[in-house]
Image (cartoon, rainbow, N blue to C red):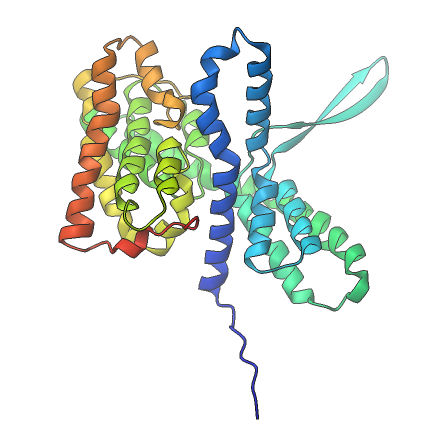
Length: 357
């Protein structure tokens, strides 16, 4: 007698597949902008072709939701029809498209505009619900699946996602309110707490940019947030060195830190060295009086946005900027990697094997 053994999907395995699919989409959608914007932006003002190309690069990242849905579906080995439906549902649930109604000479028209990447958490939830629905239905539709899946799993689940989006976004608002209370503290504890918070947030589905802009994080608070992101990149750069392909370190350095989101959610202990790296590195902010803007606080080293914001705010010593924004975080990150991974082995090397491995 022979038996067919099927691997039963658990809550944990389902969640990790959703996270891995989302991480892949984050890498694909954000990396072109992270790399190309840094090198091409200086030429955009004088070259129309470069400027137009940068517009295309910017729009490309706005399709994160579609990529998230599709790559999540493929994690579950769904067919291309089903994967396309999940991608469409995730796009609708992300909230990255807004309807704009205009009335001209009594004629009302409605147009749709892209409004950023949308809410990452709701995008992931919508994609997960679409996958669950498709797996629950199975082969019940038969050959009519090509008709019913786009209607039910695509637009139907997408509509539900659009309804939950305002409520899911409250999570980002609530965390932003907590971080905003840190700005009322003295400079040193304020910078340490903000840096540690943003260092952890960047390896979760939450948006550091959205939080920074929402609470109007400026001045030293913005610079501290940038140091938090730079510190996370620095530590993960070293931590992935021996267990991942070289391209992973390049991606992390250039800004694709969220690719390590599944790793953090599976092994939260890696948050300890990440937070400590941020706490130590950010001491440069109150010591030197580094400043930033709400728009720069959520970027860190991505596109050199945070260092450039400090420069534009009046800190014009380029050598010191390079030392405090690059040398210091990477030196501290290396030390934390030695302590937590190599010496105490609190964090095992396999904790840092990325989804892109």
